[in-house]
Length: 130
Image (tube, rainbow, N blue to C red; front, side, top):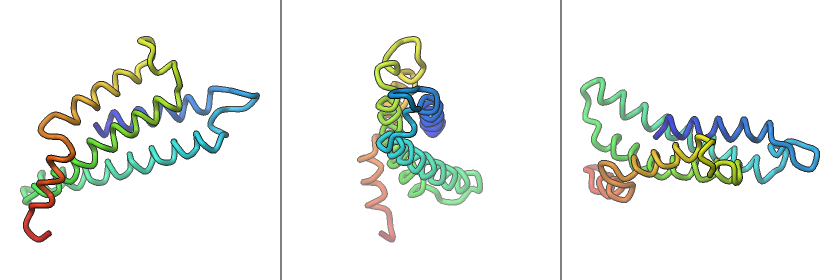
């Protein structure tokens, strides 16, 4: 999901730089900039939580809470990033010729695999020490 989020962000940035409306790139419009900034923050947070959980798992440390936090956040954030990317792209993102719809479907399926965000938030809330 992290990879799909990063690709969705990269596609949106490239599209915002290249697509021209009213004589200027759509990336110069404040509403598009807000979407791109929110997407970048989500991708960075997804990366941090995923790497933290992976680091603990690779070190043989207890990582149940970190993995649940990563899954809960990444499931929600990846869906948000792909939705924003669709908004930046407009109608072209829904065409079969464009790859973005592929990432949206993969994120949607992965978000439900092994429990959705709410399931993992419950696991975090019930973990000892909280």
